[in-house]
Image (cartoon, rainbow, N blue to C red):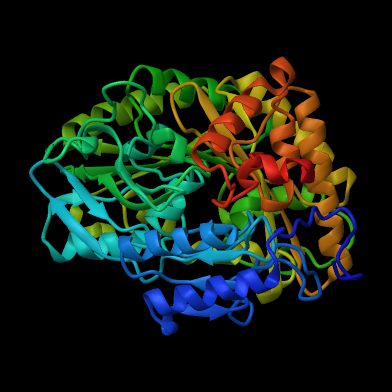
Length: 533
């Protein structure tokens, strides 16, 4: 490890001899084509984009880009023959969580940008079958080009892949996005280079592969979400019929403590079915970061932005301390009925402001608010400015992502605890509370930094490490983790002397005895590398 890399960064290198790695890359090039093998990290393209240039943790020896499932099988067999670990990804845009970098340095990265074909769109049953490198934008374009009256549930940024998003439990916002309902039926390359299909796909010629989630016997599909038991090469994606109208609703409250009735009211309307999909609650500074860098709002570089200035920013933008965004999907009279319920319910919060706009399918692609476009299933890149809160075009960010019950008091107390932890370390508190179902939320808190400032970046890593540990002590665990914090995040799940981790690692050792598939992903290690934890 370079002397410029902080000592606390958990760098792990493959035990495979460098000659074995080079031999594996040569054989892969012969098997799938030299033009599909990139030595090193591709000039930095396949490393963590938010890791300072001098740091040497999480480095790949080479990137391979298969074109078809058979290529992936060949790659895995060759890697296994040489004992070389492979790290699978989608587009390699998992920014904020490690980007395209692997957890174990010195191995081979499998990147799916070439496997970006939409294989099927079934308008009658409302699903698509895609390769893992298909981005949300590409699937949206394919659905529109086919003239299908269907919608894709998309995240805030549309450049990521369906496979990569699925691989890390990434979130999307339409009704099929809640609780990750949109994925059904996987094709997976196993550690021995074999091929399996999940669910009904385990039967030859079964037409229900992408329609029915369960199996005869144990349902294994979720094992490939944040798992390291196989490489997904094909997946089914459920698509929602386009409704007659979408009503976009924005609700602002003016005080931090208003978060309590805001969340409690939202929960009641989620539970009774008035509100569907995946609503989000954003604080003022998170919204400000989507518009302009920190210096635009507050000139002093040191310290945190004071509360009085946050109120001024909220007034300039036209939002509150907390801003709830959601959408209603259906026929216009149904939306009008549900909107009236929403206005009555949230209208009971003093000084709450409620805005709504109803639009039809022909308007969705041109909606001026990128947030509204996302809730209409239209992918875009407008929120990439968030990472430049500090550092501008050289800005980076990491996200701390605990899961919490959807109750007002607990949500408020968690956010005030996070705010105090951030501000104690001189960091502005930005928050995005993603309501993934009727009973829980994922609280995404981002730390931003200037990537060119190695000392500031190291401090951001230190603070994030502290957050993971301290939150675990008060009963909060993450739903996904940055490469650097995967072991620490998994360590917090300690019930029964880490019974969950021990059980999953038994599965890992059984299905991948050499431990070559994405070792260390989310804190799950093969036997040979378990001592590196």
